[in-house]
Image 1: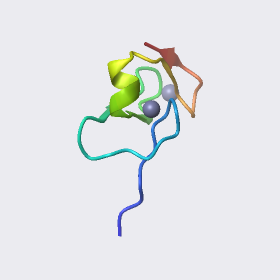
Image 2: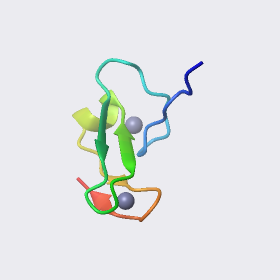
Image 3: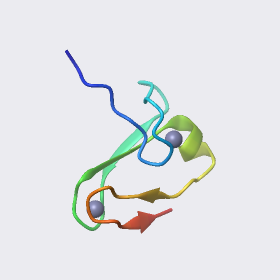
Image 4: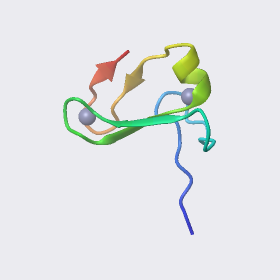
Length: 54
Ligand SMILES: [Zn+2]
Ligand SMILES: [Zn+2]
């Protein structure tokens, strides 16, 4: 069983394709963004440390 990951920006369930995952530059917590947020360059906020990025 795999837990569904959610977009850090809009909380949408991530599709396998087009989504992106990367470690927070500040605390290395994994941040996930969906295809839509990536396309629109919507910023994210790290849920752990509150770091905001582009
Ligand atoms: Zn999103
Ligand atoms: Zn962080």
